[in-house]
Image (tube, rainbow, N blue to C red; front, side):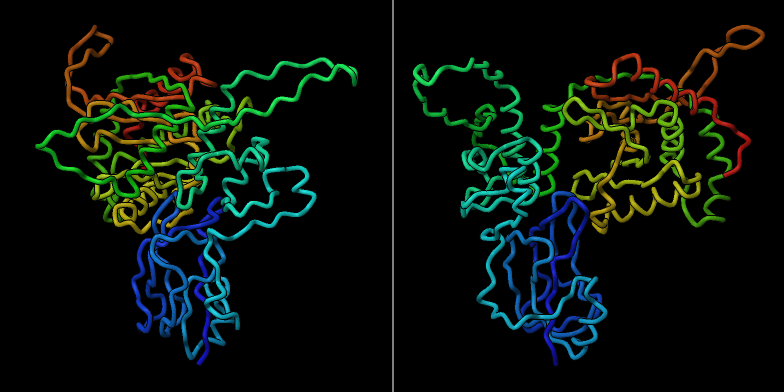
Length: 451
């Protein structure tokens, strides 16, 4: 028999920690190979951590609700295949258990981040003798914004044990940017030194919502974790980017008739249903190639042009929340590939089976509000992207058509599209031009194409 450690897995490039949501196994329970041991949550997605070997759960090292850094041991598993797991399972979330007693393990809130001395000199926020815990994400933001450790210590934290969260430091950065630049004081001689004044204590920006009167005939519903993350992300997006929305009505008759004609044959040959979403994504990708600024991000006064086109597709979960899985390199996929990606991500998104890497890295988002019967929508940009496209319900309506014999009225399939974009770098002319280019690709859909 041997003991191995179940390690908190790395869930993505930017994810350095995760919260333990629920233990699915208790001490003493048998665990099968690839059987889920616990559920964890990051700021991107919830996920299960499986055991790559069969054995018995000896001890859970952290309780539900605790935040654990990536690479930390979270449980001890006893298994006859322990030696083999040590050799072959190191990259699968398992590591050999050390002889260090369990009681000697410290919680992640007492962990300190060690940074090379040269880095500490360049980035004061990495140094300091405080016992207060700062996550790697908070320290990275502090270093990027030039926030010293002394200044970081003054930020009021809203997390557990007054811990500074990502939201706290981003609010502070925004407050910092709004402060007037200090005036330049001319040098003075030694005898003319001005009196030393104690620095004013900087307080973080706090937004006070209006007071709500409950009354008596009400039901109080606490937001779940996912809804809280969505709420914070949406408020942040509206605070960061000035939103502008443009609209256009599109005649998608050719596309609708083509899909009706080929959908049965498509499903029979490919084993997947052909919805409108991959067709809409296909048109959006073509327009992004024409206007690549829509596939960018903004960092201060720097525009980051994204070479990869990764399309996020907003997907509703059964709980009513929203998740945005990402189709990576969508420009390199044909219609069959887009359809399979859309169906796979949508199905697993609704079932809560997405991996963290599958909900990050998006460069442009499409949300099909027509799926729910909406005529149109004004979506909020998914930061740090600069635009989001919304497509409404497709309806039969009378429309005026120009023919060689004059104008006629005919029944057509019409859809309203909207584009919300970041006015810091995308003006109305570019936003409207891009939206009309997407509409043009849809209206000129080839009814004789193959899939």
